[in-house]
Figure 1 (cartoon, rainbow over the protein chains, first blue to last red):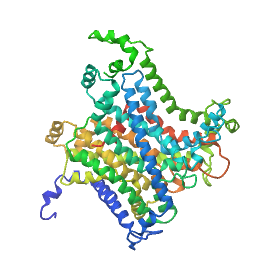
Figure 2 (tube, rainbow over the protein chains, first blue to last red):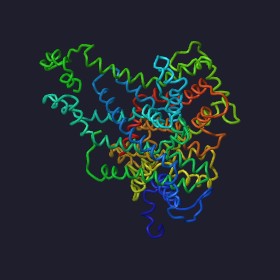
Figure 3 (cartoon, rainbow over the protein chains, first blue to last red):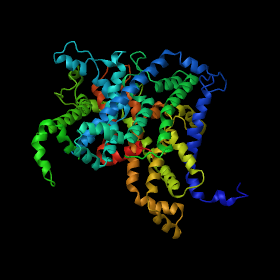
Length: 298
Length: 313
């Protein structure tokens, strides 16, 4: 209390005043907002939030909704493929750029520029490129391959791969930059030692360099995963969730339930599941990164 | 290092180049057209072409007339260059009842981005400064919550913020959106500034305090002038991030003040009328132009920004 211990509260007062926005954001928006959403996911809120407790009803309904199940399935397929491909492509590109090549800056600039573009722009460009009448399919057919079929945006079975192509185009540059930073952090002596021992280059990468870059790989994995769970704008722009509901994703389910279908309770339950998904990845990582004494190589 | 290692790997070249290994000093004489180089540069060029292709298609499509597009090859260069699609996209393309083109969204985005960038950087830099040099009890707890909060999917906090903005009477306005961008920019920017100010030599800080400078005096007279590069990095991060935002724009504003990305999506994905692909692509380029210019102009600073943004801690 100010009257009893004025020194304690008013010491460093300017720093405390300057930190008010941070404290408000952390406590009210991040902590308070999250708790609020989780609590209200146990209510039957419709158009407006209301405190009528229904237990796990919203979750039960959620997991019985085919649109949500498709969203989760899409997220799983999309997520696993994005992880694998972006890590592999990102690492290979970084390794190629790390060969003391000419025009390194030019190549890096080209591989990274899509990352500066928004998901909306990315989605719209690839919507156009994958247009079956004018895009890649028609061009390859006109080259003489009459039976060539590739229309992911109009074929429910493969639509998620069309989104995957766009997402990889946009995001692999980032993975490449992170991997390149990791490769540059590897001691030159390692390479010299491997060469003296006559270890072929690919083996050096696979068995020496990549294990050394574990911290960078884990950090990149966390970044990609949190990005995947949030994927929304790309789908809205490229397919709008279609054809039908074939390319729906959880983030879009949340938005549509909250702001289009006046079904707040469903939106809260779905977003709580999204939160859980991210926690499953982030908590072990935070534990590894900040709990242990692991050294960073990046 | 790495390229020398390749000699062992690239079979035939190993024998040819092995003489060079005997000399201990100096650059290794290299044949430009070694098999290794052909594979290396060949791969890089093919991949680079793939990455550039969408940009190329965007540009050529936006310069064609619709009859030429219907002939059907997205990759062919325009036979007759026309800037009409650009004019139409900028000035007369329709979203709903408004037919004043993307220019409306562009100016909205400008009015969102500039105050958001200034406000978020001002707040976060002072925060980072307080956290690194004027630590008070409990500061780290709040900072930890802030950083953990950066991983929470935005969807979880969407509705609580709607309520907060509605209570403040700024839901649906540009002011509200500026506030939202300031809030969500805070974790990464605060981290960026905290780490930067923590690397400032402590003697400098102590000397200034001995001379009687206070919290704001040290910030404005010493810290601000010596940390301009990090401010530029923060600006790059924020300008591209806020300009490219879609979710917050669509949730927290109303059609009249939609930012450019939302308006672009509405123009291109509108179900009414005949699809004008050239106008759509022109609109898409125009929307991507601001972040692209920032990207190409900033060069390595952009890389520094995303590395700082990506690798937390």
